[in-house]
Length: 95
Image (cartoon, rainbow, N blue to C red):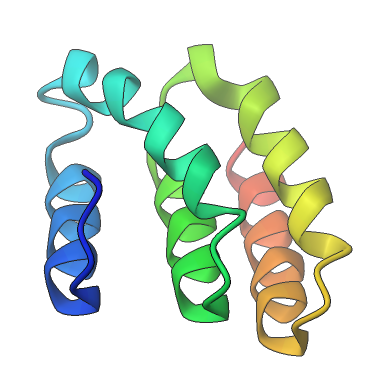
């Protein structure tokens, strides 16, 4: 999933969100890429990675999601911090 194009990366993220429950193995294999994208210089990519991790409803990755939320809550970008807070609220309501 190491794409340079933001459009392709976003489409892959949307695909994984849509098919995560039907194909949990592919979703689990992609977690490492999401964690790498949390360190991307582009704040949009960091926010997309967090959104996708939160949207994958697998109990196995719950601890990784919480760590990612904590990391994004301390992000220098206001946009990423806002996404982390909103996603944290949704995550806690659904949990």
